[in-house]
Length: 614
Image: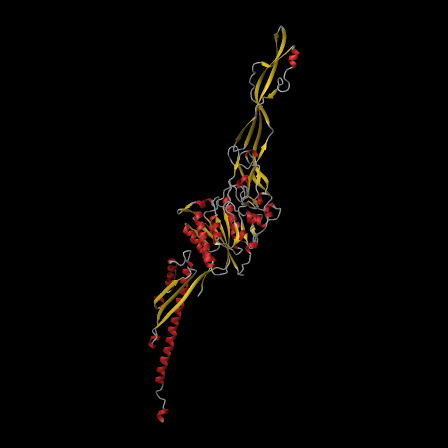
């Protein structure tokens, strides 16, 4: 009984048991923590790999390049040497041609302490998947279609490369929205020397276009006819006018012709008139000569004896000359106000600008002349004060024209009446002159408001782009902003609510293959700069710099509306101006057709929402 109650020596076995239990607890905590960390790292690496793999998917689907990208990301983010693991594996696949990239990853983690209790390893396995989804998005493509886009590029042309990149962009966006209710709309502003928005303005309100506008043109002016004569030839020999004889000289004189061929009077000889024309210079001064042969008759009475009686006979002779009636006319080259009220409706209109003032029929192609502006060296935009200096209606993205106020209205470009003028020494002049020539005019493809498009419709539009004209970056960005502005004249289109009720992200993709390169001698959005001087003080000095100021001010106004501007410099360097125009981290340089396609693909992926789905 005493032995049963004796507790001496019991601490040692209890302490031994406590050590074992403590080791088990500590070991479980240590190895479980290591297992948790390894699993988290494996999951993170798996997620990152599928994101990378999905991000590289293009029109070729989940190909070897995309698989390689996924493998590289996984191996970079999960290393056995760092995690204390072994036998790690990773496999990425896609069952829907790259729309969703799925993967499984597994590894083995050897225990450190738990092995003494018979737990040697943890087998860790995770799954992951990434998909590209697109919420509601409006994409306005502002595209350089100037003459340089016809340049050769890898056996094709720059414009052909642009068409291909656009179509692949559409395919990527379509794949991203497959099996969703997301709405994606596309708008377009092809630009060169101006933009083709006439149909859009007419559909909105015909009063947005002026009913009269001043154009650099010409008018034909005629003077009073001038009559001149050739030298007189003759006379011919006297001959009888008739066989009639008269018994006295007085009766003979009385028989002189007085109606058809009166004596000593020039009369038409009955021959038809002929017309000769000559033009000089460049169809400027025109002379029309109407020639008519004439005769002037002289008569005499000559006596003779017939049957011993004196009789008189009328004899006549004539002189000849040619009379010229000359109608002088000339073209006066100067600024002329034209009625545009019919022309702006796309109806055929005659203008008296043809040869010798003949009527020339023309129909508007839809390209426009900008609203009034100020010829200042610097422009800026502030979210508080707007565009500075004031009076630059050409940079106002939102305000509608004031009806009847031509300074706030646009005008149709009218190529057939546009003329340059120069003096007698072939130097350009702003004075009225009789020397001139037709101005060069270019007109890009029609702009399009935001709309949902089928693949066929999108591709048809891409194929309609034609490259010609000079590079006016400002006219492109201004009209891209106008067509995408939620507060502007096209706001009803821009703010049209998506059926799914979701928010809409707005994107403007601005592509150019060159720098600002205005031409002050051609017909463009600001008129004919050498003569109109809407931008410069003397017609040419700092022309490019002043257009660039407009470009940058418009870029800032657009970004202030929450619109993301993407800029692609195609086969040209990414200038400071272009980078400044772009939203942060939204500019690309593309020196080849494949690089252009890549740039469009990168934008498509960022317009879309790349995300982990499991």
